[in-house]
Amino acid sequence: MAFHVEISHPDNKYQITPVFDKIKTLEGTHAGLPYGSSSGSWGDSGKLWTEQYGTPIGADITYYADYENVYYHLDIDFPVDTIRDYMERAYSRKEDKQGETKEYRRLGRGFESGGGKAYDSFSTLVFGFAPKGMVVVWLNFGNTRIELGRYQAKQVTDPAEITKAKEKYMRVYRISPDNIRFEIINLFSKLNL
Image (tube, rainbow, N blue to C red):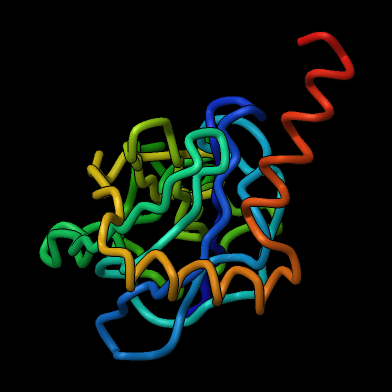
C-alpha cells in the first residue's frame, strides 16, 4: 500500500536537509524522505512527495541542521505491534451515514477513503525535526494526526562520517553546506539581523 512522507520543522529558521535516508518497511521495500529540505510548519510540510510503498516500521536518517552547523543521525524502530494496529484503522472525518459514527473503524489499510466516505485510512508519515536532534513522528489519517513517538537523534562526531555526509550533500545538492551557512550569515548581516 502507498503512503506519502513529509518532513517539517517548527520554524523556518530550523530547516534541516536529509543526506542519507531510509524508511524501514515491514516488507523490505525501498522507501525514503522527500528530496530537499524540510518545509512548512510543525507537523505539516505543506508538500506531497512521491508515493512510498510498504508498512513503515522505522527510519535510518542522517541530516544536516544548518542553523547548528551539525549533522545528526537518527536510527529508530517503531513498535511493530502498534504500527500493525494503526494500519488496520480508518479514522472518522465526517458523520457516518451508514451507521454510528465512531472515532475509528477497523477497515484495513487498503480502505478507499475520500469520495464522500466517512473514514480515512493511513495516508502520510510525517517527520518533525526540532533543534538539538529532537524528532517527532506522526501518522496521518486524512485530517487525523496521531503522534507515534518522540525520538532523539545523535550528533555525528566521527570525522570520517562527517566527511562522508559532506561529500554526499555536495553530490546531491551541488553546494557545500559550509557555503550555505556563509551565505546565510552574510544575508543576515546585510539585513542587520
